[in-house]
Length: 254
Ligand SMILES: [Fe+2]
View 1 (cartoon, helix red, strand yellow):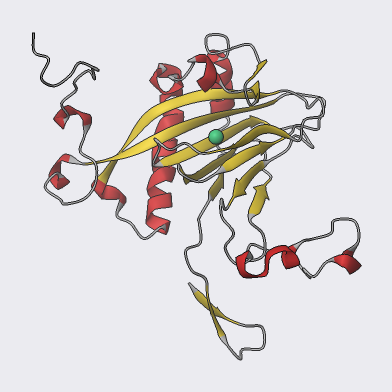
View 2 (cartoon, rainbow, N blue to C red):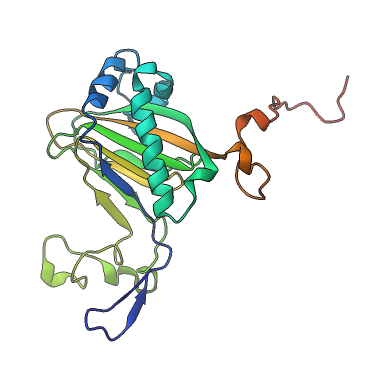
């Protein structure tokens, strides 16, 4: 992507930007009710553990929301948006099928003083990860994306420090995606967010009085049958050979 400077005297090339997709599913008023209908079966206790509180049903093995009949309309809509996302990325969605690997509730309780409700992590088994927001209270916090490495700011180090309390002490004139290595998006109820599964992200603390409820999931893309003879991509599961791994030595055949 390239664009001119404000005075049109130079061309700027934005290299390797990450595209996060955000769409409001506000016309789909039945989806929150459908998820609420599954809440009892997929509920779990929010408890403290290694790395902080465990707000995600993934930690509790409640990961198969996508198999529920009542939620199929939502997942069909999700597939449409995955197609749009791939189209924006300059891909051909018609080459692929969407495989929902996991999907789970995230129940983010009001903060008791921790900085982050969920530490920085990624979903490395996922091609595309998504979040659908059901209840988002005011001051309920957002999702924060992390570069994971310093990009534009690397050569100058701490020169890019931004003083949140005193603008006079900031060399940064205006916060933007070129001078930050983390960026928060504030979702509202009904929003669908999608991003590459390898993308580091964390969840801001919920500073409101009520619980923030969302659903998250991981998607793999597999090649459709008519494109199985390509040199790239992942075939559908029916072509795979599944074998259990064992620590038995290869020569130990007895
Ligand atoms: Fe996550």
